[in-house]
Image (tube, rainbow, N blue to C red; front, side):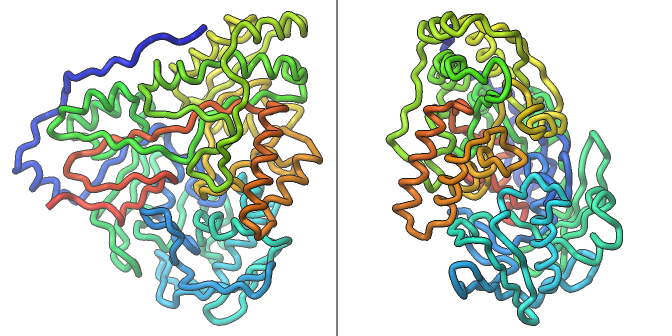
Length: 500
């Protein structure tokens, strides 16, 4: 079914009138309230990195390196780095950083953090992002050297999201207790986690870098988008994640609240399990691709903010190619392929609570229209993440998900989604593994680009997944709040401020 519903721009704003006095009050406000979609699935930064977790824990912890608001990789705990060889890189570390318990952050903590996340026993879902690292060793009072299994040009891009945890705390309390009461060195300290309700952080007044402008930050779980919007308009929340295009339109004339849209490196996609019916049949995977009207979804439902893509990355990634086209929307071809393959068995389309229900229902309808016998199963976010990591035999037959490596490099997207060694992958192809390994280890940028083009073409031909669209993150914020959204969805409280 081609989606023809036009995007309706709603101009009736419901916001309160923001008077100059209100601006002054905002500038003096000691607390910021942030409406997330769900509560974090973890506060241990090495056990997850979905947006709702990421928004919170990135303010508790520091990373070895980070990206500034312009996307440039810049120092954080590491002040500089030096390549000793293709497989060794030494990082010089700051000497003036303390954890929130007052203990100095040392080279031993950095080495521990790296070795912890690459240890298969931790079972970090981020493992495939860092599995090119063989080991981390203390090589000086304020120096750590990483040894790689192979040359890895995307290393710094990946390290922008590797948080430093205190060895003494993790070893003393264990992973489970650390997740419930994390201790970092970042600009905000953990205060409490009211499960299912909110997480509260307090400003770290002894932070080595830019201090946060808010004395306290409260991150609340607010699954309903209309409630998040109402919270902003009533002044109950100062910032909200994941508004819809319709809601952004409602804020056009608001004097108190603004919409902040930005095209991100996150993308939406459909993953069919090629290891069990019905999508173990290439014809039915092709029918799946032909059935989806990406333009109709992005224009008719999402208001034109999001952009259709034909490959499993976005233009924000190194490795993007303009030469990949994929299969076009053609429901007649989809019906013909299904007729040729024989009626497929009934299956479930699995979605997480975080995903746009309107898009999921449109996809469901399009699949039913071409002859697939399918129903939606919706689960909470932690359950969804567990399901899609169940491996080739037990993962859902079909799932809609979103993806971002927060690294802006194709290796961070393709390797963990499609390499057979990844906990997220249900694709088992030695040829694809070889291409991914080669692309991820070459120091020749032009060769890497060519390799990623080959990988994207392989995915377009074999269809282990159907890319849908580059996602536009639409944030809502008080007009008194200064915040610059970025393609990698960073959310740093100490880069924000109230308008004076």
